Picture 1 (tube, one colour):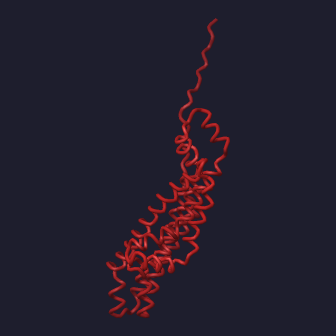
Picture 2 (cartoon, rainbow, N blue to C red; picture 1 turned 90 degrees about the vertical axis):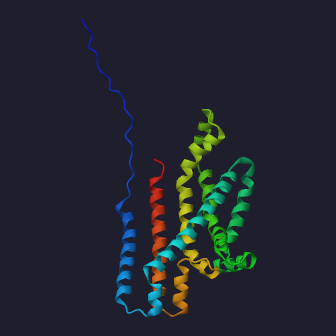
Picture 3 (tube, rainbow, N blue to C red; picture 1 turned 120 degrees about the vertical axis):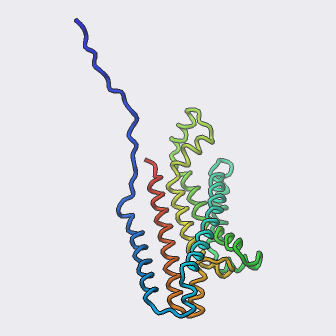
Length: 256
């Protein structure tokens, strides 16, 4: 009597879970597009004098937006380099006691009024792009530093102990366990820093660093309402888009 051979199913790789951005996340870009479209229609239907025409043209607006984005990008890169490296070091055993001191120092930069910080730095370093970058870094380093420390510290100790128990090195535990699990908290801090840099970046005009702040200040000084409103709407739209992109990145990188 021959025995029947029952075939066993071979387990294939688990299907990859694809994260999708919910429809609720589309509300912000929809609001931004509506605001920009309304601004465009209003500006092009309004009678503009020669001063307004020289300001409200594609070349000038594109240049101001490009300067503002570059200022935000450069300052955020410095924030990431400083805050992430410092935050990781301050979660290691011998350096833990310095974490409150470091966050307290970083809090001084954010507690100082931005315009006052810019003035003090301009007295020390003069005016220019680098002065604005230093001010923005000092103003926005706190959320990334604090969230890096909190995110790594809140990783469950049994998970870390298990990783060490199977022979993973401290660097491997940091890169493969702690940082991936802390990433949503870290990204929330980066998102906050980006929005701060976009908003406070408008003050860079006072140290001759360009950006969309030029349009707002010129609109106020020259009493040209279309210029003022255009600059304000562009800054608000840029901040909303940056915040939205940060939220999307957070969702996509949330641990399963």
